[in-house]
Image 1 (tube, rainbow, N blue to C red):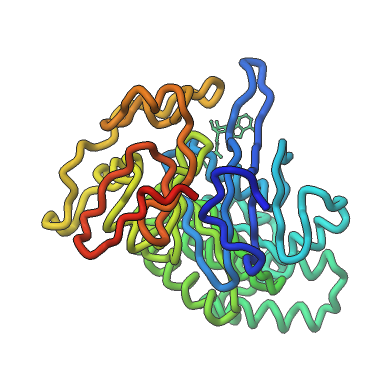
Image 2 (image 1 turned 45 degrees about the horizontal axis):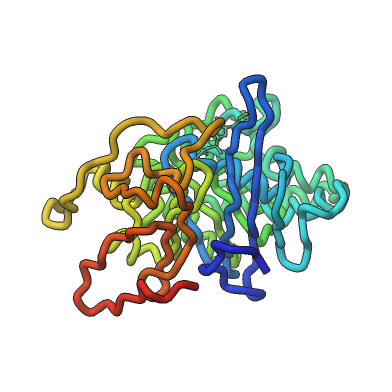
Length: 340
Ligand code: ADP
């Protein structure tokens, strides 16, 4: 079981369990504390959204799960495997089950290969027969809305951004993954295309029985796809809980500031608090106590000296804050005194 600050963990039934993960990058300027002891679970079939400003450690977290970055400390369980411990050969097999989709689809595709070859790259490496590959290639292209007779022989340079992201998704699906990690998958796309790709991921999730980790700095995007949301700030988890609850009734001042920074379509639903100002402090020397304190509108002395632990501030909603925002829901039962 994870150590302190893990009240929001949901136990053995999780497909992915990250416990006290630390990822640090040694650099000439010092040690970058990219991810500092974070814990979270993803249940089978769930979509977990990870949000936060750029540089908060979202991508590093996704990469650590696939062990693309060295895990400095902590534990990561995927299914029955503890991935920080297994050897590289076993990890290569596991990576078939955990596919990742990136922000820049074009550069993730081999420019010299036709679409029909790209989508079954993994099967080719595994030595699958040509006929099986051809069948699978048609199937997955169909699934992502690219008619195989029109797109099979096309090279990546002839694809639009949205089409290239569909190819990247098809390539991931061809390996029948259990977990899909989407790292800013629509940030580089036109707004009109973003909705199409998000809908596609939603449809495929049901069709292919996928569990999804969805990383994005755009709260609107994360909200539409996520069951639960984890808000990160400077390598730490600030808030975790049901996506509707967090967006409608944030408990952490950082979550609220992020929401205030987003232009609202319905001004009636806006929050009164001030929008987020200033930059994220350097991860080379994060602030003492609460890392958000240098930008927090509610900062008090305790925040400077004492790091807040994750605790349940309303039923099912967890925040790492000494002075969480009171619920705006009259019906909600506060559990602020229940230190878990
Ligand atoms: P996000 O995905 O939230 O934008 P990242 O996980 O990419 O954040 O980065 C977290 C922090 O780690 C940032 O300060 C970033 O500059 C730093 N970082 C990421 N990768 C490296 C690396 N390979 N070497 C040094 N610092 C890194």
